[in-house]
Length: 64
Image (tube, rainbow, N blue to C red; front, top):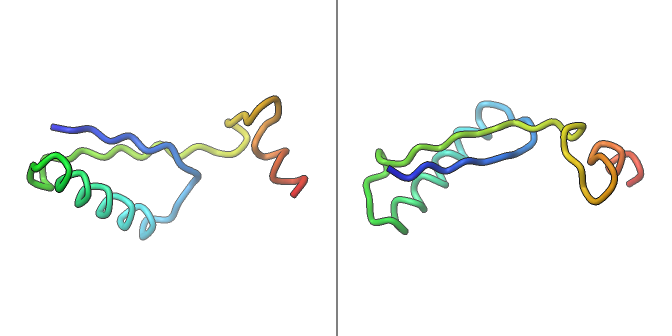
């Protein structure tokens, strides 16, 4: 049973449904396993908990 872990910014429930569906379908094709064998875990990560280079992502976003 493949486990797919996705680290992403916060999403609404509809976005999560779409993401899970698309990953599960594609992984099913690649692994040649039923879509029901896929396990997908979404870890929502706030930008203040991500460092890019030597700065927090939230600080980088403020500069853009």
